[in-house]
Length: 154
Image (cartoon, rainbow, N blue to C red; front, side, top):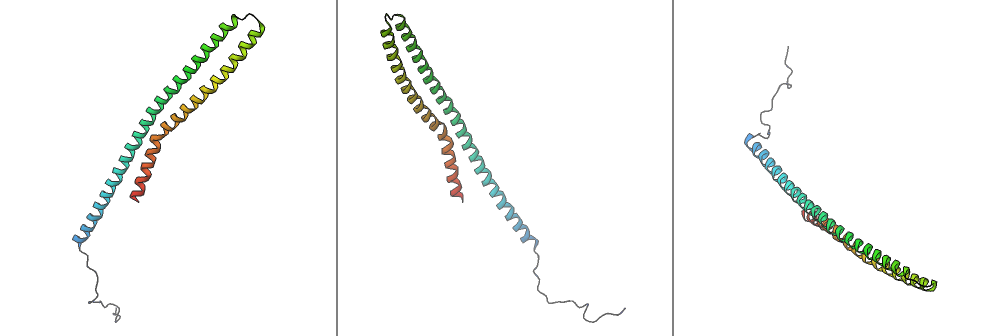
């Protein structure tokens, strides 16, 4: 076998970057530390947001319980007032002496009952509106805080 000229020559003066293991290890270490730091920050934010959500949820449940009790008590009071008015009307009807007195008493009762029912409905509606606002407030506040935190982080 014969050698072909120019095919087996090596280049002696080529500049190639030298690999330094100590610098590579430092770079890998720096990247790893940065990753760990970012992971800690992300976990901290996640943990904080989870605590905020839990607090808002607990507050919402407590408010729902309280306002639910208020609504129930208001409805019981309205039912009690209506029942007592009905019994009082029935007692008055038993004592009626003439048909005209009956119709007069019945008309007055119905008029008063309609007015009272309208007032009860307005009061109950106002209570329900306030209850809805109170129950939704902790979740709304938590959501707004989370959005504000996201805008600050971005």
